[in-house]
Image 1 (cartoon, rainbow, N blue to C red):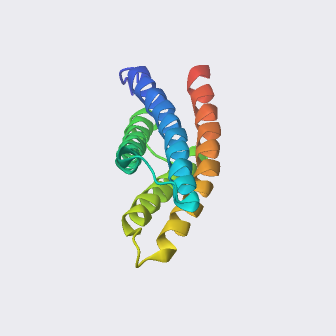
Image 2: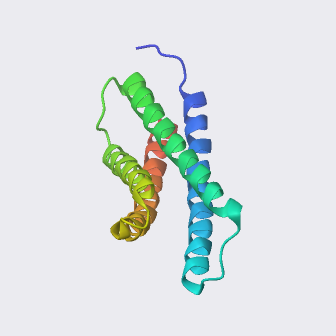
Length: 146
């Protein structure tokens, strides 16, 4: 097939992945700050929880954008999916981010399990983001060599 270049799509994906990693690190910092403020009982700035929540919404948006770009770009370029482990790594990260967002909305005084689940999911997400970045870099190298 003579399809137009998908380079512009990969550029958006690269910026979105960089943004997702940056927001993950910002969420890690703000989450650690909230944890420290809670455990030491010093209190937290009133804006911190809202900033953490907005950062979470942003990373969900970026990961869903990456999912859409990956599906459209791969099907458009190859005509099918499943050409590398990147698909499964990406789906794993999408699942973790979705589960993290759900667990964040469950955190309250009655659901003592939700906070620890949220923190555990986000620790696993660190590994997931590293793996999806690595497999994504392999995909990029494959496209550049063609």
